[in-house]
Image (tube, rainbow over all chains, first blue to last red; front, side, top):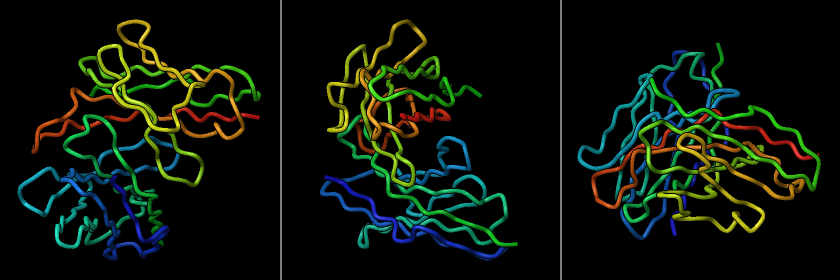
Length: 114
Length: 119
C-alpha cells in the first residue's frame, strides 16, 4: 500500500520569503509524484509532477519540487511567495501499476502574510 | 482550454434522501473518477470508471454508491440513502487514459467540486 505524509498542516510565511512544503511517501513499488493546489472554494489544479528523469521538476507559478528516492521525499519549494499563493497544497502519489487511483496527503495550508 | 464541469456546485439534502451528482468530463477522455474530501480532511479516492465499467473502487464506495455514464457526455455519482457522514466535497476527474507503463502518466483533470451537505 502507498501513503503520503505532509508534515506541516499549516505554514505561515511573509510575502516574498522562500517557502518549502514537505512531503514524504511510502510505497513498495515505484510511483509517480504530484503536487496539487486548491485555492479557496475551487477545485484541484496540478502544480507539477515527477514521472521519471531529472529529479528537479518545475511547475506553474514558480514552484519546483525535488524527488529524493533515498529519503522518499518530494518537497515543494518556491524562492519568493506572493499573496496569491495562499492556498491548500496536496502532495500525491500514483503507482505505475494502478491505472487510476491517486493517493493524497492530508494537505498543507500556506498562508502568506504581507 | 477544456475543463471538467460539475453540477450543482452545492447540494443540500435530508438524511435518507437520494442525490445525484453530475459531471461532464473532458470530451476525449476515457477514464473517469470520483473523489471526496470531508471538511478538513484529505482527498480520498472513491471509484474509477472505464468502458462503462467500474475499474477500481475503494472501501468507501459501498452499496449505497453507484456511478453511471448515462449518455456520451455525463458521468454521475448516485448516493441512494444519504447519511450525515456523506457530507463532503465531491470531485470528479477525467483522464485521457490510465497508465500501466513506466514513464507515462496521463494527468487527471479535476472539476471544481460539488459540496454536499446532508442535514
